[in-house]
Length: 405
Image 1 (cartoon, one colour):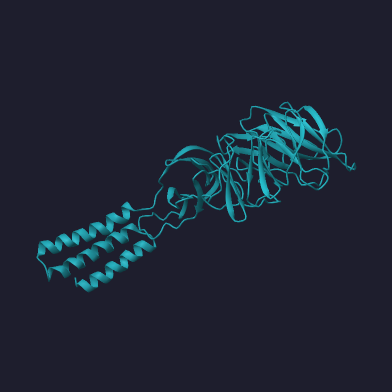
Image 2 (cartoon, rainbow, N blue to C red):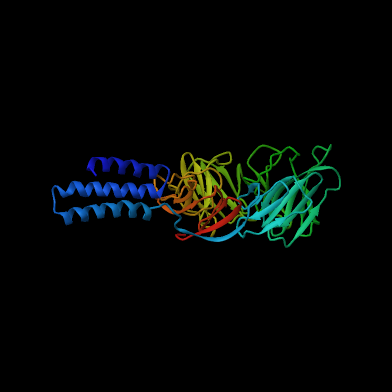
């Protein structure tokens, strides 16, 4: 066999094996290339050296792609549950139109029964569904369920949920200015009622993103100015505090900022009493910040192009500095911050012909890869935590723990 003919045939077969992909064609092509190389070397080197060189080339061409075949790394399966067609609410539960939910933390599936449609919220380890003339609540572990109905036709809006209590804004139909706040307990019974100053059925609620609710209700007073009403879900205690911008944290406290002199004052309210107050010389936003996230018990808020870190866990306010990354909305991912789907696996004859569906979890600060998941099934990211990622993988919902958490 002439070396040139063997080289051409080997290259053609190897290329065909990569494109298809077809491991057999690639291996035969690699062997032809090695044989052609050995014949060429025999003219310039001893026979044993030519044979050794050809064998080394053939082995490298076959072994290296096989060993570098893209695969999953840096993660391991935790639990799996049957998937369903639905949307992720509050980053916590996958909920279908018939109000069946999959808890993205535990994998528990809960069905609400005959209640379909409505507006769904997830907070306080519960799913709350507001429908026509009723409010339903069910714990994500299915241990408690209740239904509450207003006395007359009303527009009902949940404002907060914590410790088994739910704050509802109830505005009777055809009675402008008669809205009230009601506290509904874990048995679906009203515990308290109070006025809702300045609230109407059309007043946008100060709640978290994506169907989440804070642990403390917040309302702007009727008159424009520097003030926010805070309402405790358990007692119904209503307190007015200084504030212009309100940031309700999902399943957590409420951050309130206002201007005092030329300084910006930020306070964090887990209850009507602040856990801490921070005074900054930086300009204070007069509207809800568009760039913010929670990480390792700290709230990062972007003001005037600069990130400011505010502690949430222990009451100490941090200083200003560069955040690990710029993201819109809530991300509770710690240092594992970015997820990319449908990552190309690259040319490899041993990739088996499966769809190139891959997911990568990367470190936001360094950009280095923390974990990769390769699957024959279509992958959709449902939830990202510091130490785990939850994905829809084909017809399953799977939680993978990250080895480098």
